[in-house]
Image (spheres, one colour):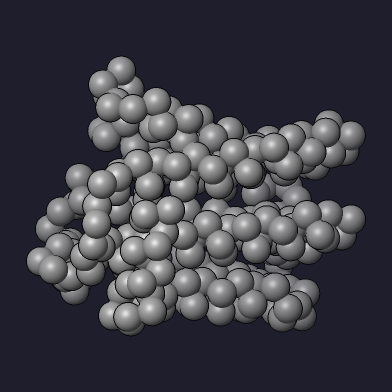
Length: 244
């Protein structure tokens, strides 16, 4: 199967379909909490952050579609727009997160857990995006890293889908201060998909230098979320961050 269906053929000709699926999952995840209550949001920050995320998802769909249809110049022009969009996504995420914790003096375990969940996801996202841009002249590498920028975004989507539509699954995961650690589902899905991509890329192209690295990066991120709240140095950092 791996040799008959080359991974690079999938990346260049069909990956836009998978990004459409990712976008639909995002709509599903945020449908109840945001889209059906779009006029009831408590602050403009929700809208700025939502717009930035939607634009990023749409760009992930459009860019491989343009490559598939050999619209290279348009692809490059839209790619330059990401130089503005990614900092906007970073700023709106941080701004919204800090707004939700405004006035909090001492972070709880859940707060420290949340800081790792958001900040370290952003860090992984920026690393993957930076590597994609660094290798923009090498299409096969660039496409792989751009594909991987979606993985740090899994938890916000899967958290909502599980909590709203499949709450019975929450009984099977560990809790922190009485609250289920829902991101575990998103972590597991990302790791499983990356393992498949690692094997597929090796079987198809003998390439072992991108997806395994991303998997290690994601595992490090997942470890930080599930464990950093226990460390005093991280609690001190969270106090500084929430006061900053």
